[in-house]
Amino acid sequence: MTEIRPMVSADAAAVLDIFRDGIATGHATFESEAGSWQNFDVAHLQTCRLVAVAPDGSLLGWFVLSPVSARAVYAGVAEVSLYVATRAGGRGVGGALMDAGITASEENNIWTLQAAIFPENEISIGLHSSRGFLEVGLRRHIGKMRHGPKAGAWRDVVFMERRSQITGRD
Image 1: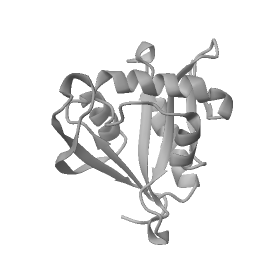
Image 2: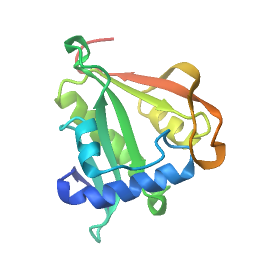
Image 3: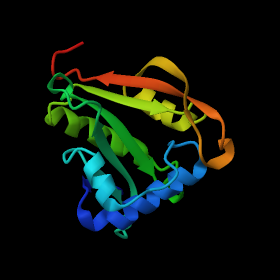
């Protein structure tokens, strides 16, 4: 059974290791390095940070949110980052994290969740779709890849969003 709990600073090394695994695939992020915990910590909201923990205590994945704008009007809009350790794929970890993350976001007055996903990452697109995210566009050639199997290529991202049903916004 996978436990979902809040992320704590003691999780830093494992969180960054899982991020590095995602980076290595070349289909999870434009980032080419995980960077430091300090940079990770500053880049994400302090709320809605979750980890999935195996019975042996090892981390299986994580969920965090990033603000999309510093403007007050967008305070309830955040971008989702969700990573699952390679060894935990196909075990429902992503779904458990997403469900808990959606609940946490709504408890913290986040009314819109956004995601930008490489079209090749069909598993991530499927996970988001299964949790009510709708494809709202394709951002063509939005960034040039610096690593992985598509290094040097301009990449598209599928832009998806989910509106909270709890806040009464549609």
